[in-house]
Image (cartoon, rainbow, N blue to C red; front, side, top):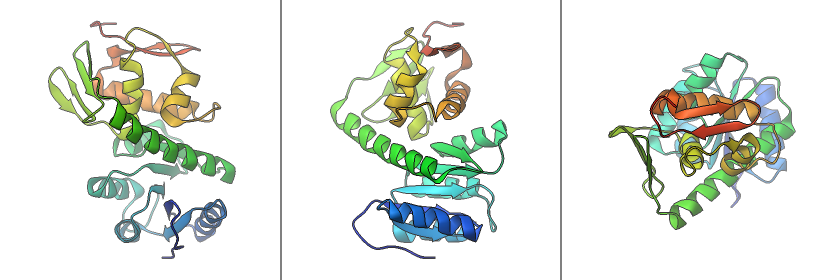
Length: 235
């Protein structure tokens, strides 16, 4: 386990392939981040506690216990943005990862510049969400769904529902304008801070995850355009 001291934002890289681990750490250090590394599940949880990272780059396939279990344990300790890395492009695996608290994912092989772009976007999103929480106190209730930006609590038909930070921000962006179609590009910019379409699949995966938690009928797809929150039953 290694770390780079300094006041920079801290990244924990968890990857069992030593070549990929070193490449990720070197590139992120070159971008100005303080980087810690781990190569298996137990080491990752220990490193998280010791180094208090601002973001975790986390491979799913790990010795000891897998990245999904790592994500569960660290999110239970302290909410933190997680960029999940997987060699599997299976939608079920990706949705499980998002469900246990990952905010975004990349499939191998990936380009280093894309990793850096995703890391920076996630960190910007966290800063933006904190600012919105300080300034926005308007709760929204439509079609049985209540969302409170101040407490970041969501209920569906009176029952509390747990959303990951990204899922919450996505639902917030939709429910603020019920019935209005939000363009994909606008959602990517507002929720993830992306100015391009790199995250189109991430958006679609998060929409599936939010639908599973608040009701599929409440989020309408407008193919080729975007998504809308529909407050009416059966919409």
